[in-house]
Image (cartoon, rainbow over all chains, first blue to last red; front, side):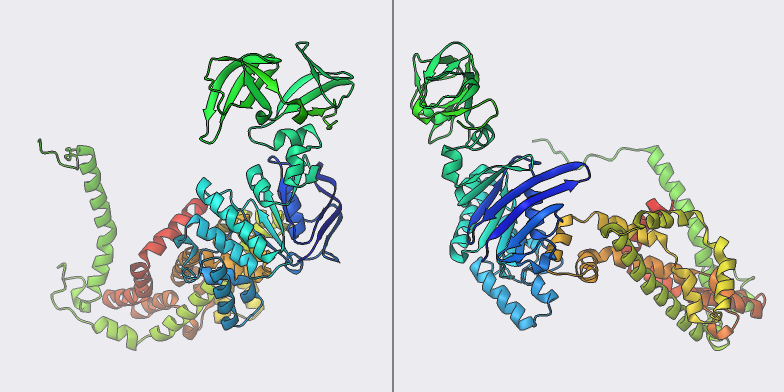
Length: 345
Length: 282
């Protein structure tokens, strides 16, 4: 187990800078999710921690050791790849103990390690099979087993569940959570799926164009987003944004509607409201027409075309249907305000 | 319920029938000389130009016995085996390493090396044969197995096939192994090559067959009868026997036997190898 510390990390491919002066500390035993849209640099960051990509600038420390220029095998990290990267010509046991085999460990020790890991990951009946004979979930477990057998200080996961179907993804998510609870090893997990990040991680780092947009607990990111990007990225369906002018009392929307807020900022601002922070009524400060109503079982969402643009609101029990004219009453105590630069006020 | 067959009724297609007939004629034209050579090798010398039956009237093994007893055929077989196995092992080893390096490693001159390999197609081996002879003679390797083997190691096709194969492997395999501490040699010999032995097997068979059948260079490189390969030795037999068709053809059959057996047993792999190389050799 070890803390991971990134200081002033930058990564450049020719003229393109994908990571810019990034600093981050991932605490010992933490489950940290690197979250962000495609191309934000999250996988590059993970690969730099793994040693698969050289950093252009800055330092990486794992525990007390500066590993910036250390070979991947000597960093004390193990990585689970998105594609699993299981060797098709080797059995499950051989895949799991491949690193031991490279290091020249005795066959008996390799078998014992494979059996131990196999038992932990419920692969003990599959040790002599080849990857082609396994299901997606089983392959994923073998990939995790291959990382486990190295007894690393830090586990790195590169979108490990993205190749699985929805049901299996939920199951594997639970297994990963259990594994982390059992091992208490530092885990760094790259994903673009915010549900995975929110459910698994105790620390989420949201990346945007190679910079950290915000780092914090799932609760902080959802309830106290530091900027418009994080506010819009976290949450599904996403936050609604209403543009307006900041006033001393709050905000004046584009149609002249005044809304009182506890915070204020001068100039152009945006009001952020999550779908669950509206009440649907026959009338309200925001009016519009329901274009689509999605029923999800436990709740439903209504997509409303308003003068402020399309909005999505939770409509559970509201009894509205597509085509209805509705009024929206926002819960302004839960509202977020962003200034012209996108920073939360 | 009407009776319908699952397979549609065959329609009379004159074009297809004509094509089949032409194919059969072509196959016959190709195969008949081989068959005739085979049956002639079982005839007595005086019958080779008088007995035109499809099956020898008085079949005999005399030609084979004579060829084996009066030539160095067993030694030629041994020489062919040594040189062909040597060429096969070395070509595959070097091609796999070169293909791997060009595909997976970053080093100065990588692209130049790759272009050189591609450009080597422009130069036919026969154009280099005099140079080969002079070099091999200079290093005093004429009439030696190594002297036969060395110039036959130029095999850009196998390098290209290996490179293409390695290029096609997902990057994750390499990175996972690197994380596990694999060296480049371990990556090549424990991951990349074993992941598809089929390619190596196919290339091994076709390289072996090519080496076994090669004539021009072994012919130039060996004057000592004890160092000759089967193909060269058989030509020497022709000179020695004069026009003795039965003996000549018996020798030819014996020379071609291992290759025929290789085709017979590894038909699928040989086809695979031909398919692999077809797009490259042009």
